[in-house]
Image (tube, rainbow, N blue to C red; front, top):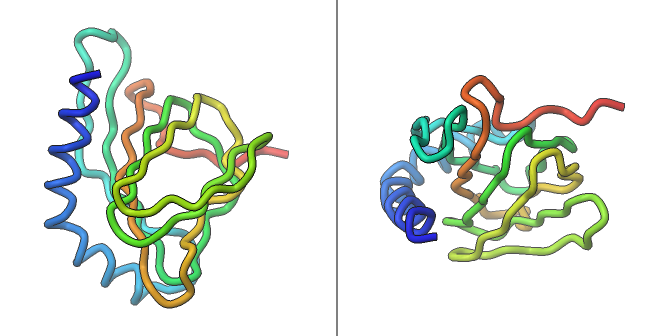
Length: 141
């Protein structure tokens, strides 16, 4: 648990320096998929065959992800704005700066969107997965 808090704190601080550029890029891009920018990938010695992937995800005003899933565990932390998230079988919830949530491997992430039509939003994502797993995959029908 101390490791996760350490990683979250340090990555949130590092992400703050990248936030402005990412938000400006997302606002310029507007429609389409959210901007996912890898920050780092690190093998975890205590968990052979697993990496921690850290990325920033920036949503332009009103922007939303397509429904998707994650091969590994996901920890998401809101740094800017408000994000609406909903996993299959759960109600949608809005998260604000400083709030976080967990997504188990394989869970269907049905809603992931910026709650605002006028302001950008950004999260830091920590993915615990295999070294070649993508951060997200479309849900196959």
